[in-house]
Amino acid sequence: LNDEIDVRRVAVKLLEETARSVRGSIGPAVSRFVRDILPRLTDNRYRDVKVDSDFGIHVFATDKNDFMNIAELSGGTLESLKLALRLAASQTLVESRMVEGQFVFLDEPFKMVDCRRAGTILETLKQLSSGIRQIFIVQPAFSQEQRRVFDLRIWTDVGSSKLEVESD
Image 1 (cartoon, rainbow, N blue to C red):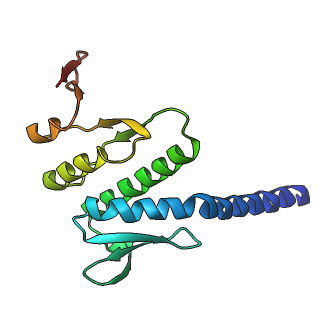
Image 2 (cartoon, rainbow, N blue to C red):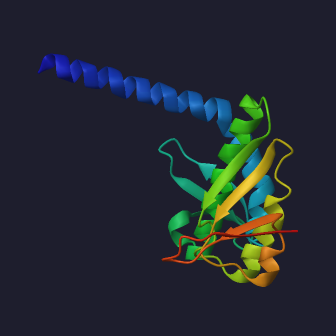
């Protein structure tokens, strides 16, 4: 039993050191990228993110001129924030490890975002980074206007084994 307790203490210490190291090494780059992309994803309503030592996330709201807890955000805004954080982490990893062009795969990133904001986000995705060469998005539906943003579109229907491909 004492050996198990010692192993757990060592594991907790390693996890704490790893979290501190990750925050120190990629934290500033993620914060910089989030500050750049978050206003574009939220129509300038939110412009910064602060992550505390317990990984609690707070968002700077322009209208309140203060940080607020993410529990106060609407579903669509929370989805935009999550997308910004995922893109920031991807961008940071691409910049730190890039040998060749990379890709980003997003699974239903717009499920709680209105069509207008989804269109803005799609345009923003095209401007992410020269290191990100391809963006794959799985999404149940896009408007005709949103489809035009993509170079190549592949779609299918539930229950169908046929894929349709369209390119510009």
